[in-house]
Length: 378
Image (cartoon, rainbow, N blue to C red):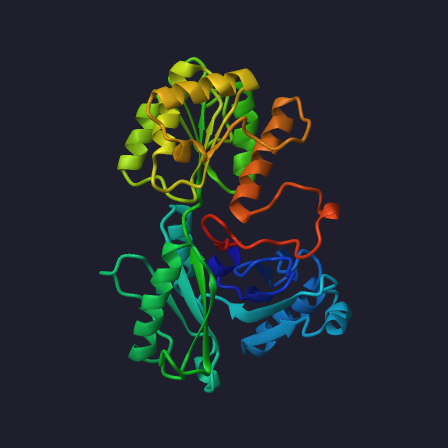
């Protein structure tokens, strides 16, 4: 952003489509600054050199380019994509002239407001390539910018709002003037949904470590505990919010306000019945939530399940509970336990089995089970 604010031009390369075992998802981006520095990554190192040259080229010529890497395994190896996957990269010059709306988009992302950016990456008329729309979720708001015609703008705006609602970034194809059943125009929609939430109940040492892990994974972390002496900003410097309230009351209020969705993860670390049973009653009855886990020994787990059943929680609702929380990594410390919990959350989200990859045959990467991919602005 500093380059953009200063009026400079950078080369922006974005992953717009992937096939097979691609290392980075759609929306991953790499920026080459005017002084040749690199920010971000499109392949985890596989084709960074080739993409660096591509980004430099589009800045020199001012012409955006769509490039595929890894058309075959031999070609993939030639440019370093040794995983055998295929990625489509769209490279473009990035400046105030080419993307005047970037400042407002960055403000939306910083303030956790959903926004989508739709960019023409292929078209029979080269003049259309690189044009974009900035789309916000409110149906009453108008998209900013234009792809080239009102028909194309209307079609892409409607479709982009659908992708934004589920946090997905992908390529859409239309006829040259936005015809839905046509072909020739390809538009990449990058969805920037607010960061998913992690709610940690119980301001204990394990919660300090878990808040750090949650922040590392990109969650907006809230730590909540009814005990003000423990729930302090000083103890949880990496959390986005520290709330002093009864856990069940806070969670119910957040759900009523519409602040809980299927990307939200809930971790109950209190292992005290007067706290964890009421909050789990609320959590397990929410219609949409990505993960619910509770800490405790086997004895604590059995007692908790009995109390929840006595409170009327059904077997189907109990089946959503990960308890004892985390994967079996053999960890003991709060930090190791936090890694175990984070691993369980990742496995649930992506459909992983938690086994060593040496024991698995087939694809390494899984399709999303909860939420969706969302890009990050570098």
